[in-house]
Structures are given as C-alpha cells and as structure tokens.
Image 1 (cartoon, rainbow, N blue to C red):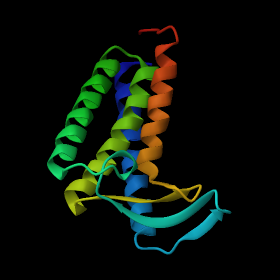
Image 2 (image 1 turned 90 degrees about the horizontal axis):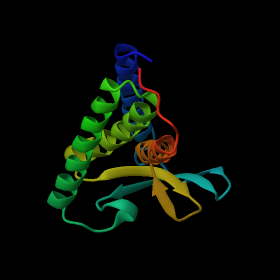
Image 3 (image 1 turned 90 degrees about the vertical axis):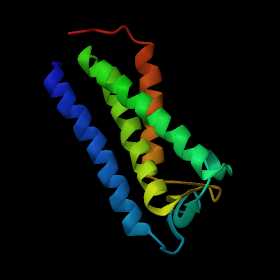
Length: 149
C-alpha cells in the first residue's frame, strides 16, 4: 500500500471511530439500562471520572497521561504511514480514534461517558472497544514479518 492511500485509510479509520463514538454517546446519553443480549450486554449510563475501570486519579494527571499517550500514538502512526506499513498504521489509527474520542469527553464534560454494560460489571464505550481491538491487532502485527513498500 502506498503512502497516500495508507494516509487516507488511516485518517478515515480514525475519523470513523471518533464519529461512531460521538454518535453512540449522544444516542445513549442518560438512557435507561436495557438488555441487548440478556445480562451479558446491556446499555446503561456511567460518567467515568477516573482512568481504566473508573480508577480514581486527579483530572490533571489523567489529561497529562492520556494526552501524552495520544501524542505518542499519533507520531507512531505517522511513522508507520511513512514506512508504508498498513498492518501497523491501521491499528494505531483505531487506537488514536478511540483515545481522541475519550479525550474529547474529558475536555468537553470532565468525564468519559461509558454506556455498554458487560456482564453487569464493566461499562465501556465504542472508543474503548476501538482501543482494545487496535492494541490486539498491533501486537499481532508486531509478530508478523513486515513488508515495506
């Protein structure tokens, strides 16, 4: 894959994750808890003021930490695009889209809006899913032989 198509694909994936995350958060904001797949997957409302799994951390530390990680992922994605490595750039675009989606919430509302309740215990959102898929995909891609250009 050439650089320009890879750049466009990466930006498109990043944008799609961000838009889908925003749209679903607006759609489910303050909605009641409803079953989707029994008690395995439900919709709910959670304002997450903490980090992973709602771990309480001061707001400025959260912003500094997530902002720094988001910047590092963006630089890594650009590097992988320049090296023409789609199996590295595209999962980084997923991670970046999710990270910016959650960072947007933090700046706009002071918390991240989570709405997907898993197993009546963990509450996540589309951004979290994109980040998790991106991390797994990226780690899998690291184990594969890379083809440049």
